[in-house]
Amino acid sequence: MNFFWRRLRKPIFNLYHSNSFSKSFQFQQNILRMTAGCSRSHSLLRYVWNFQYYNFMCDRKFLATYALTYALCHSDQHQKLLQERDFILAAMVGNIKRLESLALLGVDVNCRHVYGWTALHAAAINGRTEAVKWLLKHGADPNAQDNFSNIYQVARENRTSPTNVEVVRESEFSTRLNHSQMFRGCTALHYAVLSDDTPTMQALLDAGADPTLCNEYKLPPADYARDIGMRKLMQNHMQRFEHKKKEQQIEERRKFPIEQRIKKSIIGQTGAISTVCATIRRKENGWCDDEHPLVFLFLGSSGIGKTELAKQIASYLHKDHKDGFIRMDMSEYQQKHEVSKFIGSPPGYIGHDEGGQLTTKLRKNPNAVVLFDEVEKAHPDVLTILLQLFDEGRLTDGKGKTIECKDAIFIMTSNLGSDEIAGHALQLREEAEALSAHRYDQEPSDEAVEAPLTISRNFKEAVIRPILKSHFQRDEFLGRINEIVYFVPFSRAELLQLVRMELEAWIQRAEKKHSITLKFDPLVLDALADGYNVHYGARSIKHEVERRVVNQLALAYENGVLSKGCSVLVTAVVPSTPQEKAKPIIDSNTPIVLKVKKDKDSEFKEVDPSSQLKN
Image 1 (cartoon, rainbow, N blue to C red):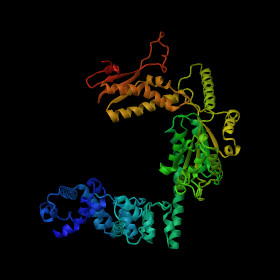
Image 2 (cartoon, helix red, strand yellow; image 1 turned 45 degrees about the vertical axis):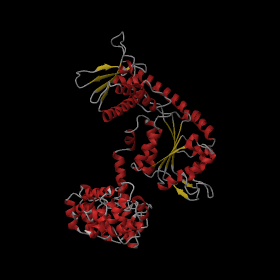
Image 3 (cartoon, rainbow, N blue to C red; image 1 turned 90 degrees about the vertical axis):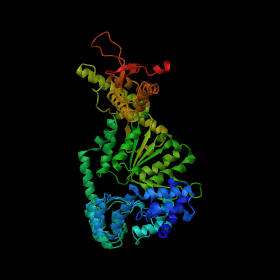
Image 4 (cartoon, one colour; image 1 turned 90 degrees about the horizontal axis):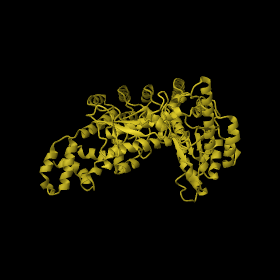
């Protein structure tokens, strides 16, 4: 009994003197040390009955600590943690039989230690080639990255001492490394190279390990090879892997072009999407100037898809990687002194050590998609910095360090000339509709005119360029823009799509939050689409749906007219027409009403959302 007491005394006292039991139990490593002695014996029961020996019988907090410890020792979660820890230790020593027995108990081969590494990492760093092959055969991820940073950061995150973390790292991972260095992001291939184990490295490569994956320092496994032969071998594998990856990407782009991917997320703007995709295709296939980055200027009204298109480009190029898209709101840089926030303060000034907002993000990902939103609001000194960035593809921060970003894509958005673009586009659309009606000798339907509008060269040179030159006041800035992309107002068919998409979003919210089945009549689409404002774009449709539909739903729900499990039909009241075949007039003044059907009802009944308020 004294043996168990000595083993558990320190971790239990740590819990006893902590301010909160819930906080202390967040740190799994402390729990594992505390319960390791209890899991092999039922002696803990005797501790609870023999507290008089330790003069703690009247201490409720200490009793609660023991009760929580006892419950934890016999919980399924604790057993799972112990099994995962044993699994990683078995991989570390290369015990295949133990790995098989634990796998039969349901242990995941990709489970992680509480400090971040996997069984494959432990096997690779210790040169356990057979264990590595067994893990890969049974589904281990060869490209899983280590979450262990260094002993100091892990100690801060887990509120323990660096010495304790180092002891665990050496006893349950490896004694061959300097654990004060950064290891976050390292893969099993990194560790195989660090241990100079060619068979393990070959097994990982045969299983599909990516030799180009970099760790937190942006270094691939080849950079850690001490032997020249191993370094050349890794570099050859990197070249073959990159060549194979390029072929796969080309085949993927051939089967599923970028235009199709972007059009799945953006309604309308066919001309803008085609222009941007054509330029990116040149870059992807090597038909571009590698010494200069791509620069776009998106022009058009607010809420028309400029920012969304930039996000979709970043998602396509960087596979939803969070560092692949950088957004800079240029309205934050309207004053001269705010330029320092952009690239960082020079030496001797406040904030010199913090770095600039743009340079810090570009350093993490030099080939990111960078969005300069509302660029016309920025101070002219900021535009001078952008001039160098767009021309040479590099930027010098306040510390004097240069960032090379020639592979980045820079996109500026602006509302300059939005009224002129909207007016010109609407005129072109009216001419196209008139031509279509004359050609077919009938009134064109909402879907009749779908051809993309082409902004004339004369309009660009005579109207838009003087506006841009008047604002930016420098031809050299405009000359560094590869493409000026024009965003035009939505057509009637596109507006109906926007309304349908917004209503479908509310159908899902009503079902998820309130268990109410929401339906809508097709006539509602026309009534809501008529509320479109060319100056606010898709946002005006969103506001119209909220104002005319969602407000009624919220009021009806508050007054008890709607309840869980009911069905609601949103419809429009169409006035009767004198002629039977005359098309009904539906516009923004057409009333929208709610019809409700509850469980006992056989049909929908029109309701007044404010009926309870009148009573």
